[in-house]
Image (cartoon, rainbow, N blue to C red; front, side, top):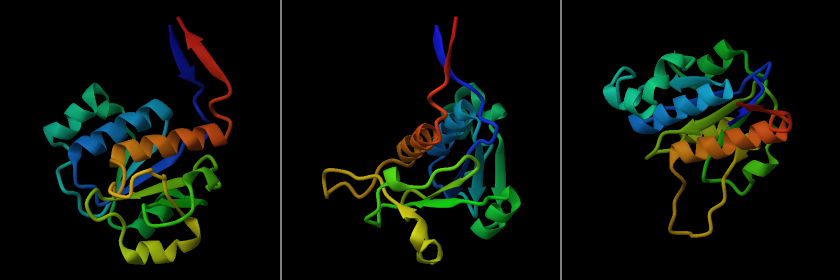
Length: 168
């Protein structure tokens, strides 16, 4: 038996700005397939999208990922027709649990070593959210883990985890 989500009418847009580690992107791609979300890759990447490591991390799901490439964040948000943009960073005092999630929203994450540019943070200052950690020596969570935490909270907050199906 498997527990299944019903396919949402409007999935979320998971936006990775300049991701650097193909395994994280592959895992996030698999997460997007599992949640009917679109994966947007913005700016220069630290790897080739067709690199074996991305496919390996996404296992045999990479061909199912709705993945779109964009030159910059503004072009991404415009092309995706996003109305709500939520930006996730370790550098804010507002919890991801407070974010106003809505189906179709863009969930924006920065690259693994640099995070998001200060200009992006400034442009979205009222839409910054963080996942809290206990230990100050932990700068941030792994990108794939952070995306999973946020995406499933978005699904929960929108009521999309309330009506599940059990598949034999």
